[in-house]
Amino acid sequence: MSHAPSAASPGPDSGPDAGRASGGRRRPAFLRVPFWAQIVLALVLGVALGLVARLGDVSWLTTTLQTIGDVFVGLLKAVVPPLVFAAIVVSIANLRQVANAARLAAQTLLWFMITSLIAVAIGLGLGLLTNPGRSADVSAQGATYDGGTGSWVDFLTGLVPANFLGISSSESGISFNVLQIVVVALAIGAAALKAGDKAEPFLGIMRSFLAVVQQILWWIIKLAPLGTLGLIGAAVASYGWDLLGPLAVFTVDVYVGCAIVMFVVYPVIARLHGLSPAKFFSGAWPAIQLAFVSRSSVGTMPLTQRVTTRNLGVPEEYASFAVPFGATTKMDGCAAIYPALAAITVAQIFGIPLGIQDYLLIAFVSVIGSAATAGLTGAVVMLTLTLTTLGLPLEGVALLLAIDPILDMMRTATNVAGQALVPTIVAKREGILDQERYDGPRIDVTVDDPSDVAAPVRAAA
Image 1 (cartoon, rainbow, N blue to C red):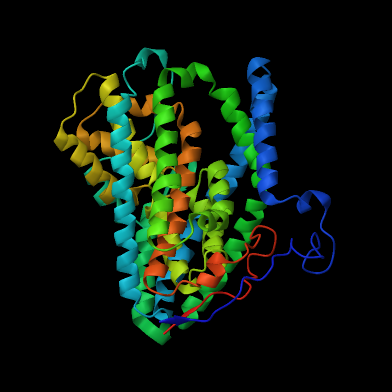
Image 2: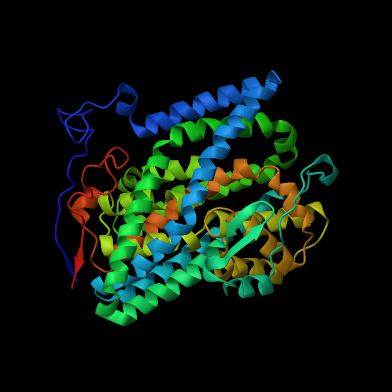
């Protein structure tokens, strides 16, 4: 397999015309501020406003911050069903353009499992070393959990859609089962792949539909600084030290575990494949920082795919399969580190001893059951599945849910970093990575039109 070399072209914010839109018009001053800087400024302002709301007991400010954050997350959730469906159908169909497609898919799954095993081992090790549940008091927490519980029967039967895309309705409105969307999309994509040329009209419509959905999502991503302000501010105002304190060790463990995976394990894996860790992080950072504030792997998926192709040099056809698939199944933060630590914490809180067989079961659930994470609310699903499988009290879900927004930021950032790393190393192993682009200057992927993929990296037989 070979690929056409393509030098990384400068982004719209580089060169003498920096600050000008693609049509020659100068962008407003606030849009000329780098996207990462907008996020950082929003983080700082959000923390400040959250402290003002909490310490000054300013209820209207807390409500305002919560509303801003909820609107941003709601917009992301609104585009998830069509985005996941279209992205997976198109990604499966795109495999026909990639030589050795079956080998690439197998390698992708293998490295998903390898990194998940490493992550769950780190989570278990931290839990056994620090005993995070020893100092927590169940009675001190006022959190409640009204969601469903997870079990292997529920998980397996949940794979089969009761209707198209697993649509269901309740008093709160229409809802979608993202895992069932994945199953339906995989089946339709495989059928389109098998049908060959007869499916091209259908795939043409799906590609156009995906482009439209991605454009809408790109507009939502542009609101990330505002969403960041609301989400961080509301978290600080609502989840202060009163709730965080009793579970401080657990919170630190989650952040340390995710940091070890993201900043130690991933760089080592990159280095073992002859890739510069610094170049990986500089290329993937826009997606990682958006994942941190949005807490949505699926919502970050278009940006993850974009940095993977434009900054890391992964062939577009392969990335269009690996990144969407990883966004719904590759969850080292939510499905490996977190459930391992959470299971140990809940067991210690309720005084339930765990044996070696329980730790092995946690590892098995984390690797095999990660498909249940589904990008947006995966940690809660994975936690209930793990606790149920181990026979631990599900009251632990309500206890840990109180600090979940604080934990979810780091978990999701770790998820997305892994979703960018695995396609990169698989492409390197298969000899299809554009090394010149990987080592070249970075493109600001957040400022230009998402449909304008300059000099895309393509894999050809």
